[in-house]
Length: 128
Image (tube, rainbow, N blue to C red; front, side):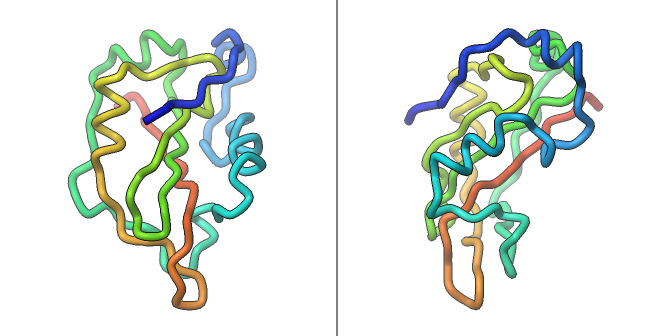
């Protein structure tokens, strides 16, 4: 499984912090690269996690330089994660273990008009 990483410094997180992953600057790039995927939030039936979501320690935020880390997960039409990418802060990468934890969570399929659709799931991990 491949994580898409776009080169950039994580100084963007410190200079122009965002408060919501729906405003993640790189989200539009991921949408353009996957035109057959809908945003999960736009589905009639939104994907639901079928297992417990991972919890990460403070190290994820200390390394990112941000209190918010946004991850986009591409789900196939059955709800299986195919790949993920960090959409904020730019240039930040999850560890292989963190990626695997996220990719191991099965989801119910996104549905539009009763039909399952591949979807982009926008996840946020915040300092708590």
